[in-house]
Image (cartoon, rainbow, N blue to C red; front, top):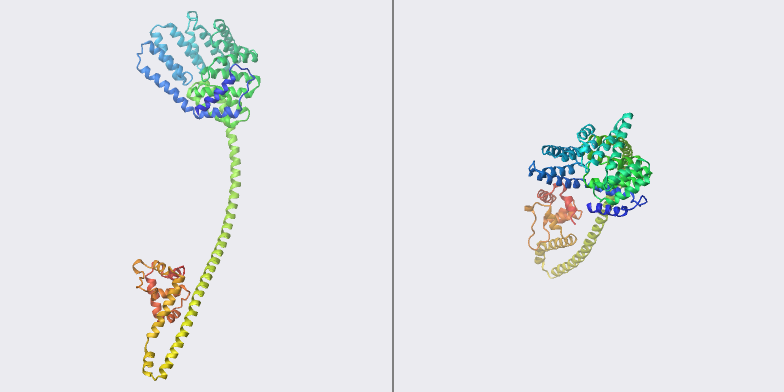
Amino acid sequence: MKVKLLIFLGLVLVGIHGMSASVDIPAMDRWSAALDEAIGAHQEYVALREARIEALRQQLLQTDMEASEYFRLNGEMFQEYKAYICDSALLYLGRNLRWAQRHGEQEAVDETRIRRAHLMSSAGMYKEASEDLEQINPSGLSSRLLPDYYENYRHLYGELGAYTQDAFRRNRYYGLSAAYEDSLMQVLSPASALYPERREMQAAAAGRLEEALKINDDRLASVRPDTPEYALVTYHRSLLYHRLGDLEKAKYYLALSALTDIRLAITDHASLWTLAQLLYEEGDIERAYRYIRFSWNETNHYNARSRSLQTAGILSLIDLTYQAMQEKQNERLRFYLWMISILSLLLVVAVVWIYRQMKHLSVARAHLEQANEQLQMSNHIKEEYIGRFLKLCSTYIDRLDAYRRMVNKKLTGGQMEELLKMVRSRDVLDTDLKELYGNFDTAFLHLFPDFVGKFNELLQPEERIILRKGELLNTELRIFALIRLGIDDSSQIAEFLRYSVNTIYNYRAKVKNKACVSRDDFETCVMKIR
C-alpha cells in the first residue's frame, strides 16, 4: 500500500515541478483512492513518528539536564511534537526556556520564546503568545531571529483579526498585522524560504492571483515531496485555484497536501477538512463525511482550541447532512425490505405449492415405478413357475404312465403281494414331495438369490437360520418364501407344505418373535426383499 502511494505521488510530482496552472490533473477517483489508502494506513505512519519520539525520549533519559545536549534534544522533541501534539510541544519548549534562563543564554531564551509564541498563537492561546513576545527586546535580537520576531507578531494579529467578533478590533488587528509584515519584509532575506511565501500572500491579498501562482510554481519546485513544506505549499496552491474558480485543481492540491500530512503523521492540518468542505458543497456527502470525521479525530489528537473551533462548524454541518442522507437511505431500505419481504413470502408460497405438487408427482411416480416393478417381478415369477409347472406336469404324466404299465404288469403276472406292499409304502410320496420342494426352492432362489442372507438380517444375530448341508431352504424359510410370493394365507401355505394350519401359525409367530424389527412390520420387510 505504501508503494502504491509513493508511485502515485511520484507520478504526480514529476508533472508538477516547474509547471504552471495549465498542468493536467488526475481524475478525482484516482487521488481519492490514494487518499483513502493513506487514511487506512494512518496508524502505520503514526507508529513511525512514535518510534522517533521514543528514541529521542530514551536519549533524553540518559542525558545530563545541565548539558547543552539536553537543550538540543528537547528542541528535537519539540520539532516532532509541534505538528503532532500541541501540549507536548509546549512542554519541551518550556523545558528549554528554563534551561536557557538557568544558563544565561539570552539568544536561546529569545529563540525559545519566539517558537513558543508562534505555536501558542496557532493554537488559539493569543494572550499567552502576546506575553511571550512582550518579554523579548527587539533591539537586542540578532539578525537571525528578528525576522521570526516580526513574523510572530504578524501571525498573532492576523489570527486575532480572523477570529474576533468585533469589527473595530478586527480592523485594528489587521492593521497591526500589516505593519509587522512591512517590518518583516524589510529585514527578511530574499534567499529565505519565508520570503517567497510572503510575496505570494501579498500578491494574493492584492488580487494578483496569476502572479501569486507563478511564485507558488517556484516554491513548489524548490521543496521536496513528503515534507511539511510541501504540504504547506500545495495547500497555498489550492487556495489560489479556489479563488480562480478552478475547483478541480483546488481539490487536487488539497488532496496532495492532505496526503503529505497523513504520511508524515501531522495532526495540525487544514487541508483535509477544507477538502471535506468543498466536497460537501458539491454534494459529495459520503466522501465529505469520511474526511471530516478523520480530520476531527486528528484535530482532537493535536489538542489545540483554535483548530477545534475551525473544524467544529463544518463537522456539525456535514454530520447533520450525512445523518439526514442516511435516514433517507434507511427509509428507502425499509421500503425495499417490505417489498422484498412480500416478494419473499409470495416466493415461499409458490415454492411450497410447487414442492407439494412435485411431492405428489414424486409419490405418484414412485407408486407407478413400484407397481411396474411389482408387475415385472410378478410376470417374472409367473414365467419362472409356469415353466417349471409345465415341466413338472410333463414329468408326472410320464411317471403316471410308467406307474400304470408297472401296475398292469404286476396284475397280469399275479404279483398281488408286491403290488399291495408298494401301494402301502410312503417312499414314492416322500420322494415326490422332496422333488417338489427342491424344485420350489431352486425356482425361488433363482428369483431371489439373496433371500436367505437378507431374511437373516431381519432376525436377531443369535436367532439367525443356519441351513444344513445340501439344504436350499428349510420349513421356516419356505413359509416366508411363499409369503414373499404373495401367498400369505396360512391355510394355502399349510396345504402346500402339508402341515396343519396351526403349525403354520406357530412357525410364523415363532419367527416373528426372533425378529430385530417390529413384529407388525416383519412380513412387510420380507415383502421388500429383492
